[in-house]
Length: 259
Image (cartoon, rainbow, N blue to C red):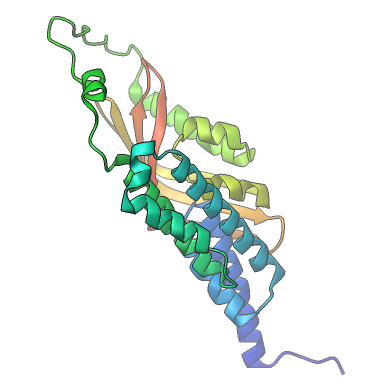
């Protein structure tokens, strides 16, 4: 007779499958902390799981790139302060058998590099470049846009959804310049990616806008089962030109896996 999994084994398999879905959904939403937590727990339950190991390696590679980018942005003067030295040390030591610890260490290093890049006061020359213009030199206020700004914001969101569905990293970055590298890199690990914002409400205030609604997210990883999530989402946007908008931030902290 074929062996049948007992209740405990079946329950463990269900938990592993659920953790895979949670990790895939978190990566799709750019939530690196949740993705790392799910992957770490999964590997504790099923050591050597190939899907989880591949996703963890992807997070590690992304963390290394982010730390390197942060280091490169620190000006020479900033490289002499303790924040930079500590970040440098964390990067050098992020090479242990504990991959999750390495990832968190690299995240911390990136934060330290970012702080080092902005810790020094601007020089007089830099301050003169950023000083506000005098009243005489100030340009006249721009003319009010002729089109409906709410429609422009909705068009930007539609372009973002289309870029995700096409797994088009370049367009995702154009529409959302500060998009987390974790989200962009994760697109290569999906066969399909579908997202939409229901019950959409848009509020425009001058040069900024907020869009809220109920996010529906469905992804099919190249390895593993399909995953979905839903929940309240908030998008922050800002105007780049007379009729151009970009996404400046996304809050998906209330979005949860649904299966």
